[in-house]
Image (cartoon, rainbow over all chains, first blue to last red; front, side):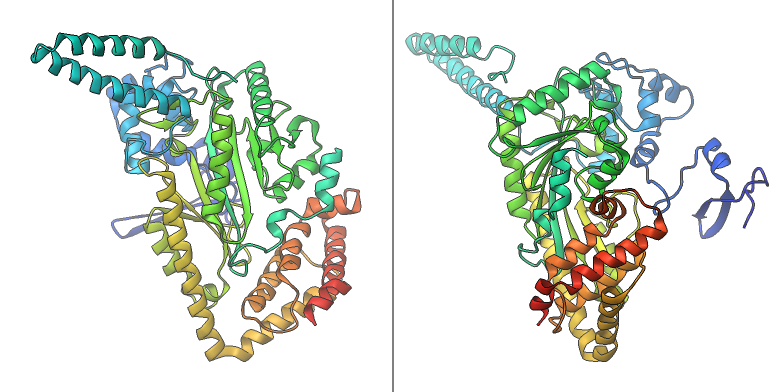
Length: 175
Length: 359
């Protein structure tokens, strides 16, 4: 069996092939040295870590900037961005806001998009609908004031107030 | 072993009954939705008591739904190693979940069609598995269960990024649709690499029989969507549906070519495989998988005298180590397992019922 190219003692179990500009290089390491060098076993042998892929996608920044970004912390769970970079996993829903600026390019690289267009929880559908209704009522109100139709404007203002009180934050249905 | 697991060990999963469309090519269709509840960090950062709370709220919410009213909860911490392995072999839980403690569990519906992994990477992984090629149906069931739970749980969601998940690869819809497809003719005619490369170019991923990180075995491939942000759920399901239809068509064309150019060799391979399975006295799991793959190919080619698909599906699942040991009721080593496997496979292929089907 081929010995590890670093320690020269243990048998090599991780085989790494790299092709750069048509030139192929190979590295044969034992588990311990591969682990020390931060190389995970390849797909097909052992487990494939999706987090490594993400960690690879995340590391765009270099030097001092990278260090600064790494120290950014989630206001919800205290996770450091550098920890996310290492593990590929976020700590809580708030991380998406705290790391918003850093995550956007990551999401674009993974999904080719940064905006959700699928289904939403019922409570959010309601909120979305209310927001749209509110926006159209505000438009109408502005137009009513412009044409000095104060009776209509008062009616619209009352409807907006009613909507504002029913659109109080929190979910509409407790479990 | 808990009574629920004993019951599971006795009967095959519903999705193995080969009742779904195109069952001769597509073994099963699975739809998964990743969700998290507000109020606790994601599983890997949450404290035990927070995970307990999540488990409790998910279970009590799910028991109020139509789909999972009569579900059973299997807590990983309460299960012996063999029982956990049994659930992995049954395709109901991931390797990650079984390593967990009693705050992690599987909530399993009556016929194994719908279930929820609780406190895996995300607080909830809703899953629906159907026999054969049933993407639209599977999505409808998963969506329905999700809607039912939505009224009872407060999901972590952002208008901009959709459902928020521990790993950004699942953010957005949290939806993973996948089909387990059998493509022996494309493998035999050496077109498989080209075809699968095409599949990955349209945003789909291809994996082996055990899902992420495993090798492709027995000509089975799991094809699933890769991205979850920026596409509507229905589009994701339709995209996979379209590609799967194409794969089925390519596979059928390759079969025609094989039957035209090498009928004798193909038939010989298939019946020899059946002969080995039906008369072996010791057999490994890899060989069982490969030989039953060949017999399955014969069924798809409508060759006479072969066992029915549900029997072949059962062999795939029940000949695995934990299933064999569960059937025997005791733990045995690899050599003994090979003998027990041969006995089980022979028994299944030579039973009166199977023979009657084959006649």
